[in-house]
Length: 92
Image 1 (cartoon, one colour):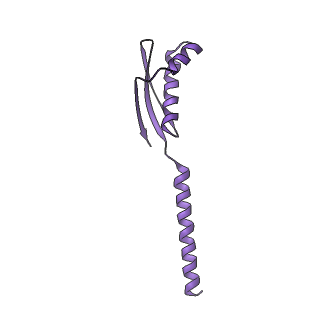
Image 2 (image 1 turned 90 degrees about the vertical axis):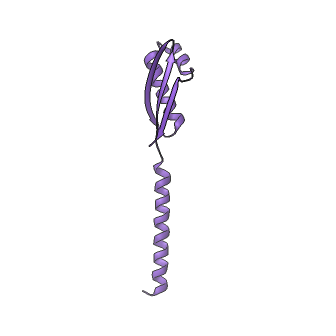
Image 3 (image 1 turned 90 degrees about the horizontal axis):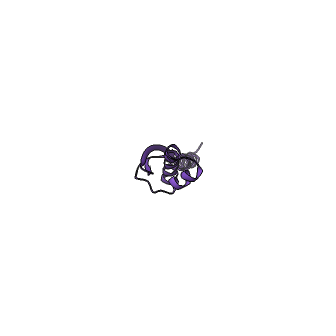
């Protein structure tokens, strides 16, 4: 194998490695974990949830908290429409 062929193979290999690394980093993504405290009708409940982004994690945590302190569908909807008392999120 001549020098030009070796260099070509080296460049192609490096390019494939770079594309593979970029694909892996793009597809793996980060996960966000949030703890949300909701106060509804004088009762406060805090729950933690994870999601692909902050909105998904916050929504899941608030929904879980509301499920524990609300009584029925109407109360659940009202609780979910209540702004959280506190929100704490972190990326993993």
